Length: 380
Image 1 (cartoon, rainbow, N blue to C red):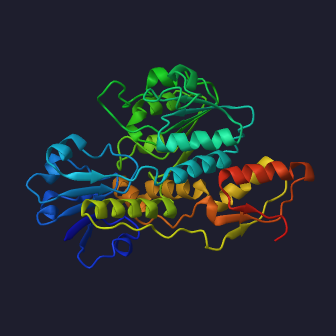
Image 2: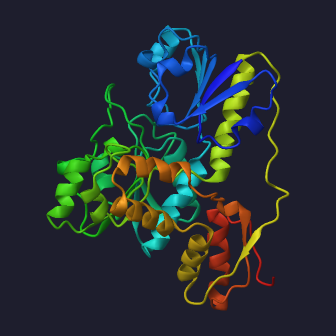
Image 3: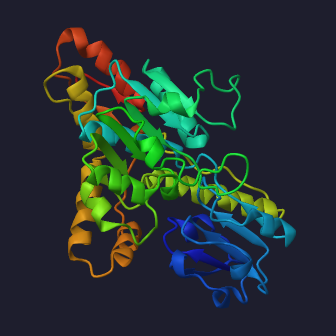
């Protein structure tokens, strides 16, 4: 049974440990119909456009995407053609949420007495919302596909645009009752509060990148963090120069999240083949890396711990360095994704001795625990 897969999927062959499977691993952005002419299964990530043009006249019977999102899949065509498909909902939600907190730490962005807006409250946005609520942060959420019974903090888009921090987690859609393409364009950008922080680690075209560039070039008082772009991988270098933090679509690239996505698609494939599934081994017994809090306020200590576990500034530096020297930014963008270093989630870390004042120690402990750090130990 031949499987064609994106070469960037981690632990693929180790997870799909079956002697019946034969693998051909290729750059996901460049998989062609000719590559699938004798293949049974296609396993991709978000960079592969899976549609009739790619699959027509091929023997593909199962498509799995090791991602939460499905906007790169032509689901209508797949179902019409009788091709079973599966995605990995929630696999990298925690990774993206930790990316958001790393951005906040890198920009020294306090959450105290701030209004936090979330656009799109599905797997990722919903996880971020729950994390923020556990920290008692004032949240406002826009998602026209949800009911207030699902999320009591739902509100209209205008209210979210008036928040101090706005994080975007919507899929990219161009049809239906609430298309998301260019949901944020020139009109919406002008409604943002002076000094607001806008984060997009959902899908690039949800923000009009041309309008955002023009807005920033005009001197707008707006801080921006972009992990996703319009278009990818050929991102706008001038926009890159003006945003505060930039990365090559890797917010969901924690090792934990990517491996979980691989495991979920393997289970879906076994189900497709009517074979018994098995539960993957977890990380509960793995030893933790100990991080030590630096001095200062409890919030400064939180920022130092978050950045010690995952520092978004390294991703920003790497992308800017490639953009400065690369002849083809698209090639460089994909190379950064392909060679992305192993990044572990906060649960792999424990916190050592704290140097904050005694009165703030408990607050620090509660905050770091809510962020997902495994334990807070003051005497290591």
